[in-house]
Amino acid sequence: MGSVGPGLARHVEGSVVTLTFSRPSRLNAFGPGELRQLRLELQRVAQDAGVRAVILTGEGGSFSAGGDVSAMAESLEKGDLPEMFHDLVGEQERCVREIVEMPKPVIAALPGVAAGGGFSLALACDWRIGTPKTVLVTAFTALGGIPDGGLTYFLPHYLGIGGAQELLFGGGRLDAQRARELSLLHEIVPEGELMPRARARAQELARGPVGAYAGIKRLLVSSFANSLETQLALERRAMVEATRGTELPEGIRAFRAKRTPRFEG
Image (cartoon, rainbow, N blue to C red):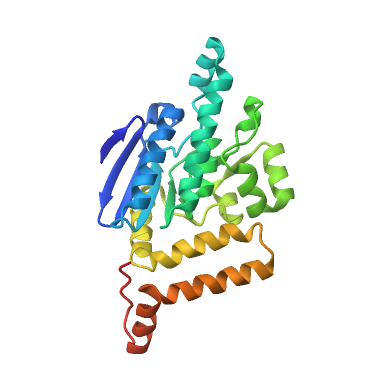
């Protein structure tokens, strides 16, 4: 695993890239610089045809504690807190968009706390795997702040308005089991099995129809704002477009031949 910039490491195994927050002494908290590096790596991954799945995780027992409160305190003392937050939240917004729009699956492997902006980044991912030590924390109101990074977008869609209100106004802390019950985690595995399971899941997805997964991601996001009529039309258009690619024809041929399809992009 090699460092690619402040607070971030990259590891490549076949067609799977793992991006790891690497500030364990700060619970992998981030500032604008760390998020900028993450955004650049996500952009590179999105454009790399050799990458078919991505894992986002954290070093040292935490996913990410979100924004670096120590850096916030320093900015407060210097009198440039508004400018610091403008940069911080702006970079986080761009990272969330890169994950959501990534044309390949993104797995969040959550070894421990995912708080504040770390929680937001995890919810932007397509598949979330935790351990019994995973804790999801909204964190923002503890500082007197407003949720960002899409948290007020994702939570109502997962939990409904009432569930989002309960979490954001009621303490905002979920253990792994409760998060699994709410589908905020898709899997819980023993602590020592987190990364092996994340890699196995990523490899499963990488062997699959990654182009179809990209289409599913786009349709799921668009469904939040669309009528049924509009969504049906988008599905039809996407399915017809798939006939012009390689994956759907390969899937049909494999079905007829009673063999496993070979999806290669």
